Image (tube, rainbow, N blue to C red):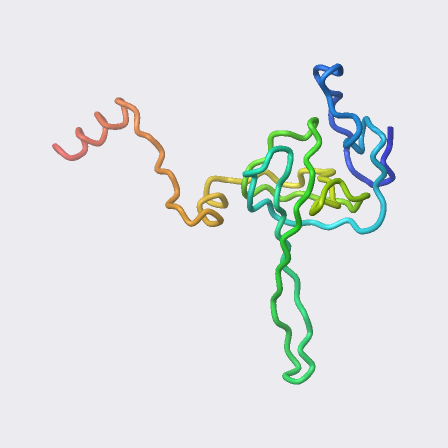
Length: 145
């Protein structure tokens, strides 16, 4: 079933008896209307919810310049799009209020996050790739020569 947006429909849920059709725009009855926004996932701490942060420019007429603003929008994650990780770029669409703070739903994962993206967002050092025994032996041989 099409949701009225130019997004790819994800595969059907694996176990239909346990799936939450009430809050799914693809296979349920959740209507999608209004704005569609694109942003980066900055938090996945809540169950079936992500926080999407988007950055935009606002004109400051006094100085004839632009300043950056950002907004954080909680969005529902349908079961067919799980799991999402911090750093993913997603498209969210406006819908009816799903809870006190959620009025958006994730409709597409535009870009998967890389390890460098996750390190930048979380503020942690990028995990170094683990060396195998062969790599360590090769490095030792080069040092002996």
